[in-house]
Each structure stands twice: as C-alpha cells, then as structure tokens.
Image 1 (cartoon, rainbow, N blue to C red):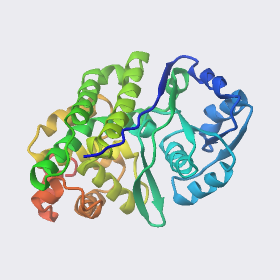
Image 2: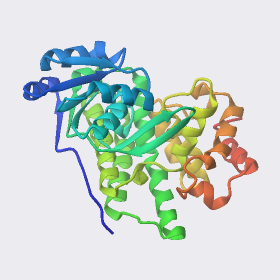
Image 3: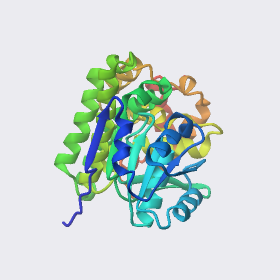
Length: 337
C-alpha cells in the first residue's frame, strides 16, 4: 500500500506565539479570517505581516472560490480563525498549490492541523482531502479568551475518537479495510489524555487548554498518518453531520459528536457511561435539551446518519440501524426521555 504522509512542519504553542508570523513577513501573503475572528487576531496578524486580509462568512465551496481568486499570485495563506476559516483556507491554498499557516482562535475541533476540510456544496456537506498546514501557531492569550462553549466542542470532538477507532476496526474486520495501528493508537491516546485532564480544561487552566490544543493537533496528525479521517471520524461524526442537515439551528460540531459518541458507544457495546461522565465533567452537553435541539430531530438524525458517507463502514451499517434501535439507544443513554 502506497501512502503519502503529510504533517505540519512546525508547531508553535505558547504566550505571544502570534509574533512568530513576523518570520513570514517577507513573503507575498494573504490573511483569511472571519467577521469575529478578524477582530480577535486576524487584523493583528495582517498588521504583523503588513499584508491584506479577506473575510469569509461560511465553510462553503463558494467561499473557497472567492479565496482562491484572492490568493492568485500569493506565496502563502494565513488562516486566522476557527474551523470554518481554516477549512476554507486549506481547500483554497491546496487548489492554488501554495502552503498555508493555521492560526486557531479556538480549540473547538481537530481540523487545526489535519488535511481534511468539511465544506458545504449547495445543500450537502462534503469532507475533502486537501493538505495539512505548513505550520500551526497557537497563542495562549487568544485561546484563553475564547468562549467556553467552543472549548466544549474540542472536548467532544476528541472524546469521540473512542467511537471512531472502534468503527475503523470494525471496517477492517468486516470489509478488510486498511487499518493503521499507529494512527489508531495515537487517536486513542488523545481521547484518554483528555479524559484524564478534563477538570483542568474546564477550569480553563493554561496546562489544561494546552493539553486540549496539543490533543487536537495530534488528532489531526493521526489523520495525516492514516491518509484519511478514519482515526477521528466515525459514526458519531455521521450523526453530527446528519444533525446539521436537519436542525434549524445545530449546536457546535464537537458538542454534537460528543452526544453522538454516547449513543454510538452504547450500540458498540462499549462503556458509554464513561464517555457520558467525562463529557459531564467537562461541562459538555449530554442530552437533547442541553444541545438545544428537539428530541424528535435527534432521533431523525440517528436514522439519517446511515446516509452520511455510506461507504464508510461503522456500527450503524453493521447492525442495520433502524428507528427502534435508534430510539432505544437514545432513551437508554438518557439523551432523550
């Protein structure tokens, strides 16, 4: 089997890390940010680099095309923002065959260092393979000031790795799918580490948030080593994407993955209570009410999840998930009443 493993070349984590951008000021660069995140750090990044900044509003292929046009003639793209900004910049820089630097303003998901981009294309959402960032720059002052609900998203996203690896192993056993032992172990180590440090994360201590950010970067690296999102994206992620398509106002992707991990772990016959307790300790939602989504919508999302990436074999396909099984899983885990 041939694989081309691409990982970030540099990772800078610490206080005043944003100043590392000054090392790239001689390049022909462009900063990409969002309406809120440009005020948090995007404008400052553009000032450090003495370059222009473009704002994107959504993680869509339409925005990718806009950024691609802005990147013409540029040598380097700088993504300053959350997952939406980083994913759009990944795809646009990849298509333009230039490197990009990831400067996350939150620790809400593991896309900060991965080669995967989740983007909407019309009414559908697609996960595409692009390239990982050349460098990741994490400034603690920025991360410490991000809202806690975004941190909860990071906890949920990493904890769902337990389910993703189990799904991946199932695909290997039943479908003879490639299974990476090293990348799966790295993904599980990330989840275990967050489980142990969740109290420190909830208290927003530098050590705890540093661990969470390093875990998210490592989770992205696991995907880079595997050559796919398999180590960190399974049935819980299918559930989250199904929710996005059904709910009028969905919650954060990582929060939804956390709730999905409880239900899918139950279906896998694993210790779903341990996942639920860890999420509770981190102040993360564990029920439909806490997510702010109607119970009926959650049930529909469980059933619809089988339509998301149908070729990716998970517990959903293995048990032939139907409405009765889905409802029992949600009720027996306390996600719905």
